[in-house]
Image 1 (spheres, helix red, strand yellow):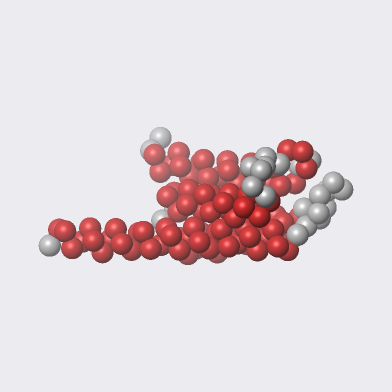
Image 2 (cartoon, helix red, strand yellow):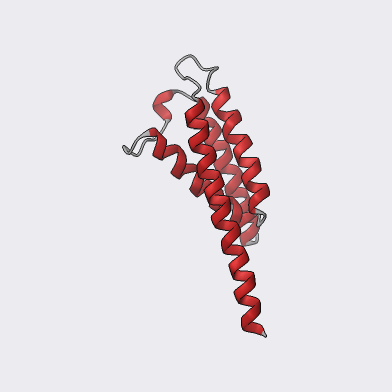
Length: 119
């Protein structure tokens, strides 16, 4: 198994874990102690960077993860001990967007400076 394939499987496992934690009992949610806003933002930032390593199309990855975060937050209205929060979806989307932009800029810089060294 190649590293890329293992990374893609890890990303899919992270998605499944996010769904389980997001829709499971509230006590299953890990918290950093910094506030749910930071937890959502930083969590999705890291997840986005991980996904961009596996699939090097940051803008497409970002768009898909923004939709995923919004749908997951909307689905949290279903369990009786959970509630859906539009601000949580916005913090998650902001983390995804920043992660996708960081990945996109990093990839562009690597291509640009990597190509200039070879000439």
